[in-house]
Length: 342
Image (cartoon, rainbow, N blue to C red):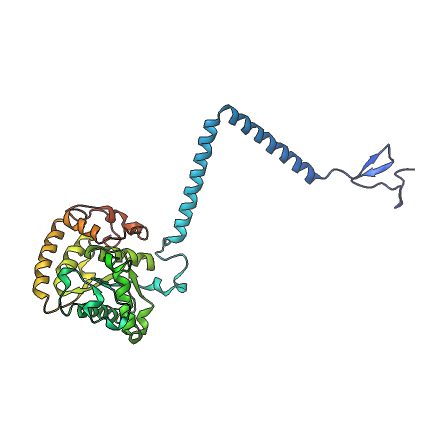
């Protein structure tokens, strides 16, 4: 008798259904298969409704899909920016322990004045090895460039927390796509000044977009932020003696950097160029007094001429906190908030 007690063939199998026609037990339908079927049915139903809605209102569906795509792109962009920009503690998310550059807090900036053109680094002392403007063609000019480079390396060597930046873009058409900054870095390397100061080489980098002295300062501050994740606590500028007023007063005031945290190392112009250099500086200084940000008139036109290869300036992408300063153009100091003036 079917269903009798015992463990034989005819015993009742719990959880099974008995098929009267075949006189056998049939395994019940899987719950998982049932759930999958219901989900599949629901998806098909939703798909049919969307298709119906699309046939009735194709333009609305297109606009909705476009908006959804834009939202996704914005979210992904914000997420990428969050990964690349420092977190709220002022450090990059990769952590200081992975990159010693993130621990640097001071900036030493050497302003570039020419592009080195010789194929050999053995003639850095010769004026013929540099692309010189007409107002630079004086005997001893090359030596002044070397003095700036060496002074920058020595200043950085005295401060273990300083980042050394050689600043200057591809300003000479006849020199080809070579930057002033790379020229200066290469000269320091060829002179073995980095070997003499081994602790400097790893923190000696370049800023390769500046086209004038104001951009030397502003772009280097932004580059410092790109590299370290923060803004410099102290700034030291290396250039000519006769440019001290321009950098330490006009440019520093334009970015409202604290005077007590700003330092200047000046070296003399060549003896043959000293007189003409002072006259030229008086003219440029007057222009920056009227146009502190070099964004109009003769200063702006000069910058355009110093960009023969139409290079894209990436800033302020690496320093979003001061993007307003990059966009500002006025005779009065920039009125917006700045990280170092809060």
